[in-house]
Image (cartoon, rainbow, N blue to C red; front, top):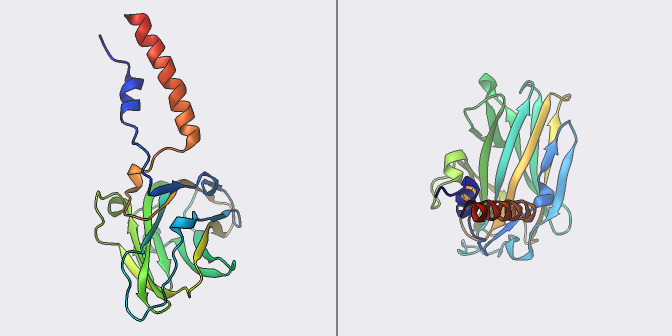
Length: 227
């Protein structure tokens, strides 16, 4: 007897990884300049706290990732920012997504940038790793697309170092900047983790599980009727 496809889909749904926390309220559509999702508080166990030590301290890495869908009428003048805040609500650092040379998208901060090699309407996955470097400096490693979906942590697309101080990284926000209303960014799969986590392995949010559960019941009912 043929097994309904919905049951096969459900069998492929990953189990919850206890090291991963998702942020449904960080997801959403940024459809014009100035719209923002967040700031959203980071789970207490996933906040990066700089040990303020003269030598790098291993084992306190934190990972923040998700998917950004670009639905734009033109990529000229479209920009976005992801900002990390300290627990005192001050800005720790931000990364900017903007249209670069040759109508391709870039992710940048200061003089460091990574060209995504894609333009116009598309989507990409990202993982931001924050780890200790020296005193109040941290390394911020950016993994994009394929590098954000490796089973094991690989080589980042680019790395910056920045001062964050001893105050924990407490919250994240996304903001649409630039000129006019030439399209939208849609954020999805937003998560944080204490270990390397490919974006593709992030489990669906509770509302998605509820929908899948309903489909499972329908699939089981159909299966029983065919027996």
